Image (cartoon, rainbow, N blue to C red; front, side, top):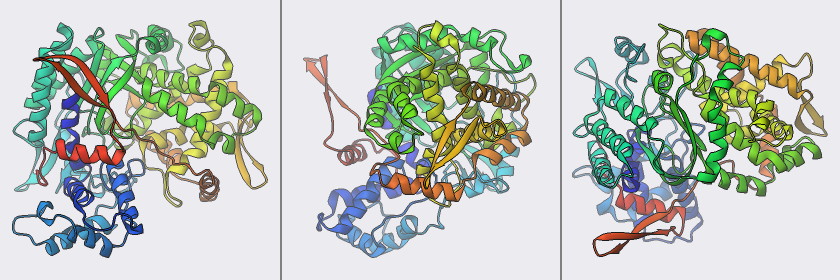
Length: 616
């Protein structure tokens, strides 16, 4: 399973751009074979670009989606190519190095070439405007018409999840990602290692799950994916777990195509106690939610929750990773078979330790009381919110009978609204006595710490992640601003939340935590209605009205203040290398090693796990 995870890493580069693997191989060729001075100032700027490229799985920012270019000059970049091993460059047959540079120059430097990985702006053709390699030669209308013939009510598969849509000879068709099809070389390697995992499965449930996963990846039949997902949810006993395949649709502006991701984990028994206690009360949370009665599940089934220690991640999960995961995404599977929520405990712990060392809270916290409360309770508050978001939030509510899935009804706003909905469940219930009663929260100070952190982040500090003048593009960032700004605006008359000034600095002040909770409940009720009824116009109004636009004056202030702290707005992870310790032909132990640096690891991955050519 470890090897299978890494064998698919090339896929994400190709999914984010049809030039992704070409660019990756070019960068790695230079980084590994350049014969010139690596102490030069311009080499440092190229090295920084290489790090950003690997961090984002391509040359589009992993959060902002905009293309970024090297800070070194194009002339210097050309000299790097010319003074590297030109024989190992990913050139076309018979292509000279000069011609190669002419071809790749605009891919690296021209901001008009693939300017945005995912373009979610309203009023445009989001398929054509986005640079992701999910569609070629087709318009958004053509894609929507293609899938309109495929019903998404009932137990229908997630049509289009594992394919690229192209137009061939004037006919719109799919290139399915499977053995013998698109990404076949990488998928065959993934299945090779998964077959070996089947032979050493912990139990029959895990064995069945892995067999179904292999069947799906090899054949590409989405009904097999559903069968695998149901079996995966049913496996509650295995200590080793993971996923592998085409899962989340955030990289697709119209929410149909799954980007490659994989992880392997072991169960964190101690940390699981907290999230399991929450999952046990899933029916209570559903029954007592502020949703309209017709949008509630009468019977919440099979919410399985656990905390995990992640061993390895790949694709869209690495090196910048999620902290919680709830799957499967298909609403009908959640309703009929349940879902599995995982909290990535070692990742969360690392983030919490890093947060404790940074100065963001001191700079942007309202006062000593708020700062002290966040420092004392913020880690647990964030953990609880994540647990509620994944375990209860994504699993809550239901779509009305006859209403199709959100990729058709809510389109390019579906991902943002779903994340907003799950966040609001966590926000609403973290201020509930129930969490104290079941023993997962010691006092309401934890809840207040989360409200302080969430509003400060949603209204201010998350803006450190985008450039001045940009609007918010990424679904999670949109969701957080939507929730925070809607609550601020709706509570403005009663001064539930205020912006306050001290000198030339702005702070967020919560005056009434109870009323803020009520507002979160009202917004949760509305967003669930939008999802349940497939109300596109209302969903669009929420996202465009509250989640996208940025106050440029406040944004500049935040960026200026943040720049004085000397810290970065993003974090990623290097990963352990597992090596078998053999006793004859048997494994007696596993040795854990870490690379010398992130750069060394990415070069090793490029050497050992490159199964896709420049063209597919």
